[in-house]
Length: 105
Length: 210
Length: 269
Image 1: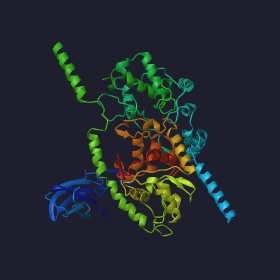
Image 2 (image 1 turned 180 degrees about the horizontal axis):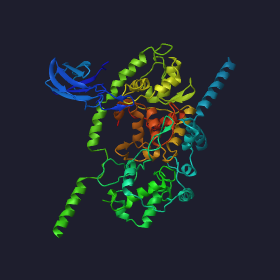
Image 3 (image 1 turned 45 degrees about the vertical axis):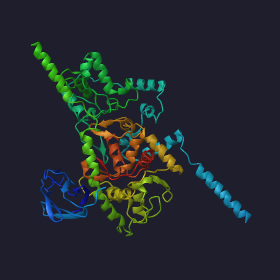
Image 4 (image 1 turned 30 degrees about the vertical axis):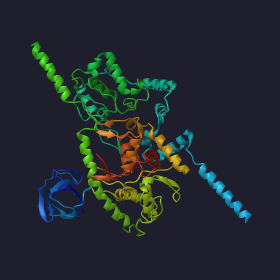
């Protein structure tokens, strides 16, 4: 059910500029449609790892918009390093995607 | 052998002529083609299809590109516009500015979706979409000139009230083919609603004049 | 008393200056935010969705869209969308990308045209329609290339001129043609910038940024949707899908937008 993320990680000096696009409804639990209130459904946690080491551990709330974007700058990165992103939502759904840091231009 | 050569060169010539004949249609042909496209493009009841029929003024005011409005055409549009003006039954041109304020910020009304007109109490006056209104308001458009201080600059005499009423009812009286919708003349707003807009414009207490 | 009065005047003058009149989006904080949205566009997530649909065997005939001719020959995608709308001999009409997709999905895959049209425009906050994803995927194959709408067949000339006529045609209780909102520079409706489409740069933006992610709807939108939404605000009736009217307008605008570099998905409010 969880859709793939789109991750770009570009080296700028010794910092990887990581840009992550996620696909998720991020329902606030207060939106009403003709069939009633749409239940709460949002990404609760986001973990970003650099070569297996956690560099960002975020707790999100339903205040974040649908199809969220996350930008992270990871210091001490090298070209080819692994950046992996995992999100977990309040229904227990999970998604992990990873990408290699690309050399900057 | 010679006959085949001749046949093929005739074909080629015809082909060249046919290809070379493609060109921009003239204005009359364009109009014919486009009008047909317009009336084939919408899914609507006969009543709603009327919205696509142009009145005389709209026909004049649909100049294409650099086409100019002639003096005679402008005069005709003004004449038709003046003839269209209807005043409220009460004769009172200045209504309630608080009601006008609400209407000015109301961009809804009379839009059609899936064959149905939207369910609204009344049509909004759409002002905020195109005009700056009270000083400091950010969420306002600039398609039309700023109305901030409208009443402060002009006062609120009977003459100004009448001018303002007429301008909102049918802007083309004073500016033929203006970009502004002829809100009263087309029936989008009622005369009574327009009196509230006039008050919103000229009442010294209105936020526009603060 | 007099001193207090002049202080009050000074204060209100300063307050007025501090609360500036509505500013143009360009060159202030709004434009920074908008630039960021374009650079990381959730619409990109729809490209793979469209790609899967394109290569999947679908419909009653159980075939993919690989043999669809978008104008450069069956199966040739690179640069094809940048040349649309154009005349197609098999349908004897000028078609834009969406009508071309309808043609291929019906003739190649056997889908029923009205059924496709019914689903063509997705609901906000959903995965969107197949058409939206497919249109984005095919157009993305022209990314980086120049818009190149040529007029050679008579029907292409006709479409261009008819589109121009329609652009200026005023009707309904708003007295609006397209030009009322899109005929001058630096205009906006409330805070939504209006493209100056009678100007080269404005036309180029129209031609190169659709399909686009509509932020407020959380979904990818197409030119057919955009035209439908415009006529809604103009208080005109429901615009049918894939009409000559819409294709004529698109031909007019895209041809005027020639040489723009395709960059989809665009990002709209």
